[in-house]
Image 1 (cartoon, rainbow, N blue to C red):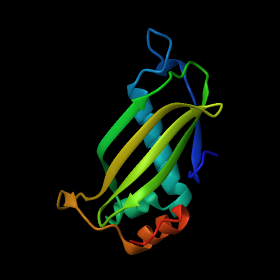
Image 2 (tube, rainbow, N blue to C red):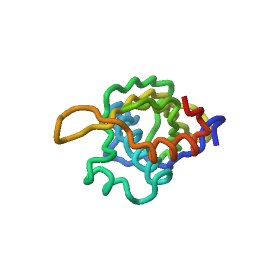
Image 3 (cartoon, rainbow, N blue to C red):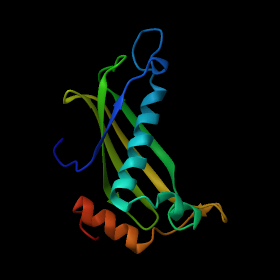
Image 4 (cartoon, helix red, strand yellow):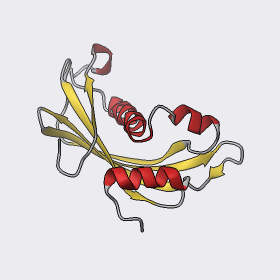
Length: 143
């Protein structure tokens, strides 16, 4: 486990994810990050993520993603996608991701997501119960 990360999710590179250069096409890294983020929340909040979204309590959407490509992944590589929340605010939070192959860093990403209310089309506060679960899991300060 990488330093300061408490969660990772493994992903194997499939043939459909490589490009003409025989490396992972850049857009697939966003998918890997999205998959790891979903699994992160499943790990921290349990299997209720879909219910929380349906009840319009917690339904995060992507606000910003910055990806730094360091080295390419190739067909059949087993990747570890590390995920952590580093900051949490009233309605938004920042995640950091590191994608590795055999502990070698391939990609780093910073993601900002916002809790979204599909009825109003605006951001809404993250429920305190969810904030507390994240704060405890990540060992963040409550400020």
